[in-house]
Image: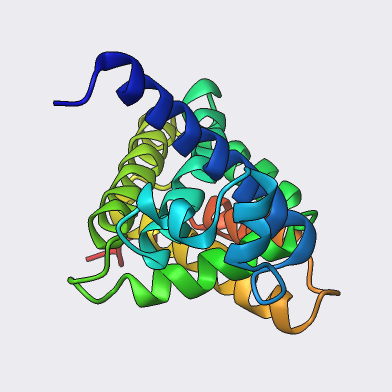
Length: 198
């Protein structure tokens, strides 16, 4: 039976691996980063590195989970979760390797057998719920059209954010944050359609 000390050391090493992998992906990019490089940076062999994770795919999904900790706190710590998303998009423009990693792993995680599947399902649910609550509050205060479906607007907001990340990977002149802000300004312009007089 493993001792508590060895369990704690294992958790600390796993955290060190994730922090290092996050830095390597941010600096070198998804395609140029290697498991060997990450392993060497934390003083392990590749086999030793994968001892802490069930697979390379799990490692990559956990790196994204670590990255998301900051994004999720930006959304929950602000009164305006939409602004938290815009701020995260601005930050993402500075870490293209992580954007590429996210786009690749999130697509692969659509497969239910992928180690990151449940995480991505929960991630989308979290962000949609947070945005839908914010939108519903804006509707109650009169800032947004009460006829809009708050949950569908939240889904569209996430779709615009994810879609802009793909466009930006193909054309880095695309401004992800500005496009998201513009989309939100369009939502704010929608007003209820007056009923035809009888």
